Length: 159
Image (cartoon, helix red, strand yellow):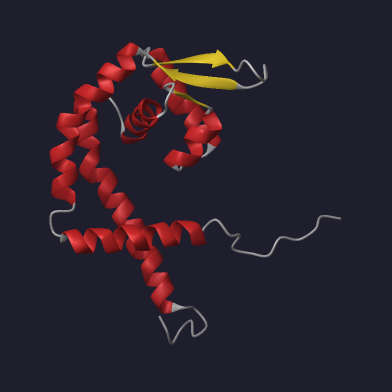
């Protein structure tokens, strides 16, 4: 590839491919686990994030950013959770145009019941790494996430 595309940064290109392969592999690895508890990975993360807040509530846009989904995909996830009565939607008191997502008691119970079923596969997924390697991977992934917050291309002023 280096000869065919001499200006392509090979190490970075391979890194992107490895990350994409990792994401795909994680999805395949965890999908049956979450299906077994009646959730998917993203809905489980939403429930966990809501449980971690002081009031059990957050804005849809905050949840989308924290889970790493587009707002459209988060809307779909929230609609599924709302249909299953795991979350409820309320109008924000300070701004009637905004909504807040609140975890319900059923949502809390679902998340709590899922934890024991998810914990072992989570540990197994990273069992090949030492504690030091897990810490290094965590630090490197956090740096990568921050680097992706910068635009890939310079922003141009629109005419």
